[in-house]
Image (cartoon, one colour):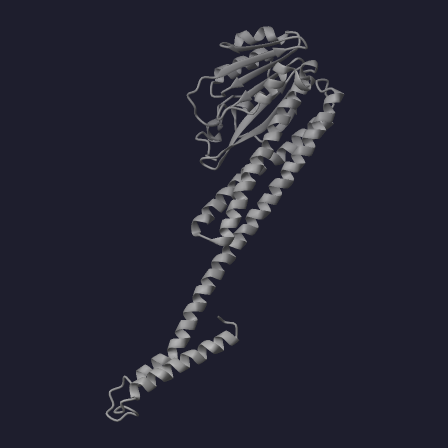
Length: 355
């Protein structure tokens, strides 16, 4: 995960409610897409101006307005004027470093959540902030527009009228969007889990210093996942407990299901985090064992050659009178003694299970 090039320092000294885009700089054009539906029909349009959203404020049925791209502050401000959004909401939407949360503004609910995707090529976790505004007959979603979104299943449900989504209101649409994001967390966990298992097998069989970088990279991915998931539990719990006119009683049952899924994601994340911590211990132990094995072989070799070196050193001295110096069998006898000593020491090491 790459750090955002713009930081909070840009907001230093500005009055509250001043929207400043904090996030990845992009030259892509901001897209505004509208899906309006009821039990009978569905209408999809791509708008070019924020003013085109005004008729949908009183449009019958349910309307989903999707804004992709947060770098154009003028569009955010115009959306705020069109739908009477609080300046602090616009400020939070533009700041992509927000912590997941939910806020009650009487006439609407503002929800911040993190959408995750996993880049298989770079093995990086891509985090994108999603801001959702729940109104009486409409839902407005604000996306950073990094790697697309995971909302196609919801769009397909609306088009095909699956799960009775077109018979329900905007609160059920919010549930569907949240549920799709949380379900995608499980896909991310599966991909991370496969990488963790492969790394664990490699560390046990062939520990290598390069694996340490992969290990720390996976730990960073888990940390980013934890930062996205842990606050989500509070968000869903608050939506469950909140008594708001925009959330129907039937929808609360579905929100409880999201809460259960969130707990499962947190449990899996904690398991992976513990696994990575233990893998670091395994790596260090494997490296230590390999070093000990090498040192053991070198020690045995050195120990065997110590008496041989002693004998060779004795007979390497330049004295005129030495035992067996003039004997034709002196050289073979010394070699035989050296070989005998080596075999005796090897047998001793074998008996002690040192080799």
